Image (cartoon, rainbow, N blue to C red):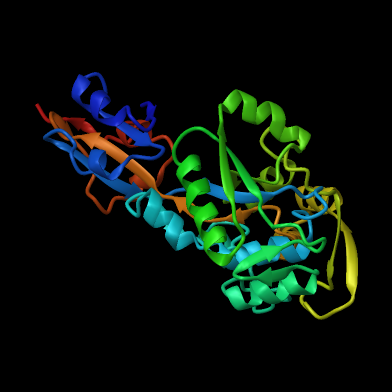
Amino acid sequence: MPRQNQNDLIPAARSGNITSTYHNSPNADDANSLPDGWKSKNVGGPTPGGPALICNHEHDIYGMREVKQAFAHIVRGQGVSESLGTHYTDPVPPTYTFSKQLMETYMGSPIEGNLNVYNSTDKASELLQSAGFTEKNGKWHQPDGSPFEPTIKVFKGAPFTPTAQTVAGQLSNFGIETDVQVVESGVFFSKYPEGQYDLVVEFWSAGGANPYFGFLRNTIGFTGSSMLYPNEVTVPKVGNMGGQEQTFNVEELLNSALTADGQDQFVSEMRKLAWIANVTLPEIPTVMWKRIFFYDTNGWNWPADDSPLYGYNDLPSWPMRQGEISPSN
């Protein structure tokens, strides 16, 4: 069962060579104009993640905590979801370190109810002003008086390019004039690890079935250290945003989670990491992809719509082994 890219769904369905497929980012026209007998379904299972805004953590300006947090207050996942298509994306708040399902499992004392909530442009203004930025005639300026005009770099292709354009529009509407530079993926990933950017739009991992792997991906990066996220971070005391600043070694926390002696210790370490992510924002998530499964009912009997078998990653091979998919003639 292949996974189709942006422009391949309808040709593949009409070819007669496939009976089912997952899709990364189907446009609305394709999703609503499948050949006769084809159906689509949002299925369960581990959620991969989606596009995110990432700041250059080593940059004098874009690596500032106040700037990253201000961006988190400004960027709206709802607008990104509407630009990409609500049929395959759900907006997520920047407070999501993991998928909704994992957040429900791994939130708790001492961090639950104490995390930063990023939803106020007024708070964004306060944060920027506290860091020495000024607003003049609706445009923001850096502490040295120069215009605050970041560039978002992104590799060419859906859904990352339209996400970058939407986020740039949201920042520009706030008064931070933001440009988008679209580059070929080979150029992007050769320059990205070198820190030659202000901001980028790239992938954030929602953790799949385990939050450890999502956090590892979001702090180390796609190509190994490409996120430029620091290994040592200073944040308020876990559970108390007004508390004394403490320094944590992220690698040591990840190793402690990986070698945890039981679930309780694992959850405890992941909550510390979730707190750190909430404060330092390795990535600012915008949307979460839905897992859309397209399948041909011509000549095939499929499980009922409410069957839990649709939640398996290896659809349709597992249901077929269970006798839940069979020829209809």
